[in-house]
Length: 472
Image (cartoon, rainbow, N blue to C red; front, side):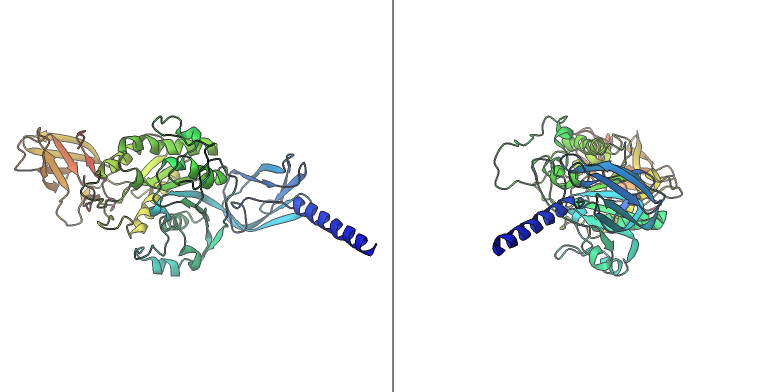
């Protein structure tokens, strides 16, 4: 009898324990201590609780309480009004047993995504450094910047969560975080004087198609969508939709200001398709987030020697340049001056992060008094053997910082390009080649690897460009 009684007691305790466990609020990883919520918005919060229970959310910044009823599956979602930037605050969520989210900041939140040049941490890759990283890491302690990284994962169906947590901006955390994203956030924090939350979701070597949803890829008939019923032992990260499902969908709906993107190398052999996919990605993410045409800014791939037999990556850079004007709230940061011949991961990640931040500060936050884009060709005029070029985004003129301009080429009707002598003038660029008496086309830095040498006086480089539409 004693054994039966003991068994009943133990079983009862287990049942009570299980019920208590079920009663606990469960939040996805994107919500937790040290997080940043987007300021001055109705920020979504969601999670799990006891089925059909009433969930109460109380926010310390205004003492307001919100209630929402969990569904029969225990899922619930609501929105809370966020104030102007500040903190730290707490959020208490309860369906009987309270869960407290501590050290919450209110500020600006950005998603940071792409392939290895976005993923590259501040500490660098093996034998591949980030310029100036040691000093920036050592001095990185900043309570107003918060970091979270979504780990690598693939899925044929959309997932709701990932394994990760918000981390404080401290040297040991910054060392492991995306360098491009960190430099971007650091400038925003300094310029806006508000907390900044950075959500990094990236995977080296990946194409753009895996980062888009099934619905988002439907307009692109050349993309083969995966068969969800097929049994696959190991799902390739290059499969369309699988990174969106596993690494983007779990954060969809979280309050953000915008996104930054650094990818393209893996798609370099299909520039025409990429020119359409790049704005397609932004439109897809805007659709699923449902908060309007939020900004997306991206880094143009840097010059790199892909090998003599490789497809000229300048065509991909051209596609990225053209895509920048395809849709609203879209923009490109150029890094023509930072490429490295034998390393696809340029050490100067600060240039990439800073130039993304210039775009955000000017175009999203309305800041003035500085440049945010490099020179872009406006017009070409030919008079005899001379070619005259004018540029937008150069109100104070152009510069090569004392170096001879060496990246221009000119061709006649025979489509053979020769190096051109180029000079900066009050109006723009004048160039010619003794070997091309009747020029019809100009190219600038239109090679796999080349170090750009044309800038506006604010120090932002011109992208590689061409005036022809020839196949090669």
